[in-house]
Length: 189
Image (tube, rainbow, N blue to C red; front, top):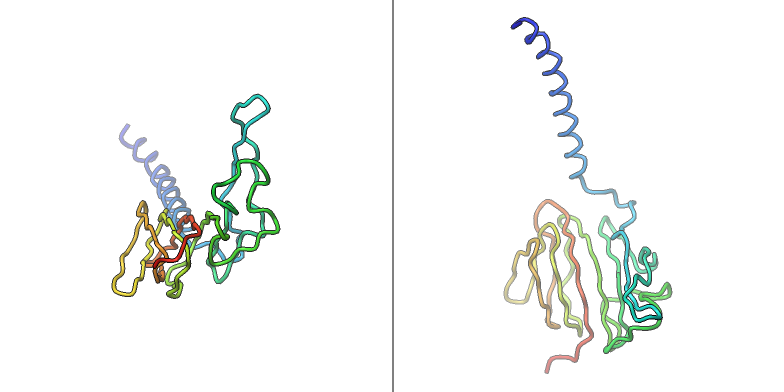
């Protein structure tokens, strides 16, 4: 009986070794940075609305318009929502419309929501915009660079950026994905 178990354990060991090697290779491949040519996507954008009987419904379910996405040097981003004026209208077209042109700020009297993935080592120069920004780190690490200080941010960290001069740098060896909402603001006095 011992001899049969030993014979069976040889092929079993070989199978387990091959399985382990395949799993390690798969995990390693999944952890590699995606090529710059790959389309950046957040999956579906689901927008709610109200039907003729006053009930909440899914008004649309589709990808964000391609014109609101960009890629450069392996970094990518897209604007997933735009409000052209606050208070916002709950009727009318779902923004961004295909003609919307992304800029480095929110629309006058409005806001936009964005999703970014920046590659390791990428830095965004110091700048300021007349906006109130809410930045939420989803994965990776991002360094907030201020005139007198800096902070390393990780998943779950939130920054409320109030129109001050700031820059960004991806910290660490993995890409950083974060979401941000930029709201048009009155300049600080």
